[in-house]
Length: 316
Image 1 (cartoon, one colour):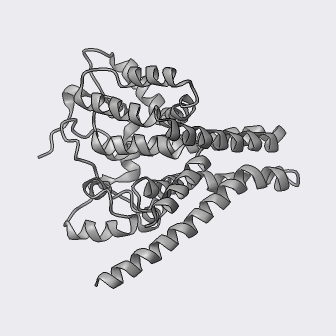
Image 2 (cartoon, rainbow, N blue to C red; image 1 turned 90 degrees about the vertical axis):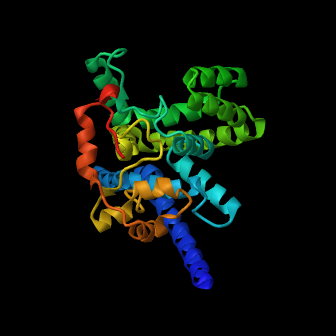
C-alpha cells in the first residue's frame, strides 16, 4: 500500500512539473511571443490572450501547491517552482506564501475578513464601495504592492509592517512579529527583491513588445487581477468570524473543478492543508462531506456587498 502511494505521489509530482511547463509556456507566450511574432501579422491574434487570462485561477492553484510544499517532494524544486510561478504571476513567492500561510493560521482576523464591516464605525455605503474595490481588483493590487514594498529600505518596510498589522488583536500581533522576521531578514529580502525585479522586467519587456497594442496587455493584466481577487475570498464570504477553522466547499462541474485543482473543496483543504490537490476528492469522500453551495453563484453573491459584523452567521 505504501509503495503504491509513493508511486502515485511521484507520478503526480511529474504531472505538476508538466503543468508548470504549460503555465510558463502560456504566460510567456501571451506576454512575449504573441506581441513579438503574431500581432504584427494580424491584431486578431490578440484574442489568444482571453483563454490565457481565463486560466489565471488554474495558475494560482498550481502556485498554491508550492506554497504548501505539495508541488514536489524535493524542497528545493518546490521552492524554485514556487518562485518561477510567482514571477509569472507578477509577484514574489515569499510574499505570497507569507500572506497565504497567515490566512490559514489566523483566518478571519480583523484584516482577513474583507466581506465584513462594523456598522458602528463604517457607513454601509462606504463599506460597500471599499469591499467592491477589493473584490474587483484590490486583492491582486495588494499582492503587487506588498512585493514592491519590499524594495523599500528596511526601516521603511518595518514602518509599513507596523502600520498594516497595527492593533492589539492577538492575531495581528503574531502576524506582525512573523512579518518582521521574514521581511527584515537580509537574505530573504534579497530573494524577494530579485523576484520582484524579474516579475516587473517581464511586464516591462511585454509592454515594449506590445507597443501600440498596449491596451491588450492592460486588459489582460486587469482580467488576471479581477479573477484572482473575485475568487480569493469566495470560500469564506459571509462565514462566522469566530470560526477561523471554517471554510465552505463549493460545487463545480468536474471539468471546471479540475481547472482549479480541486480548490473548491476548501473546507477539506483548511482541515488538511498539507494534502495535495489530487488527494482532496478522496478525503472529501472519506469525511462524508458535502457541498454548501455552487461556487459561481457564491462568487456572484459577493457583489451584493459586505455583511455587517453584527449579522455574522453562527455555524455549529
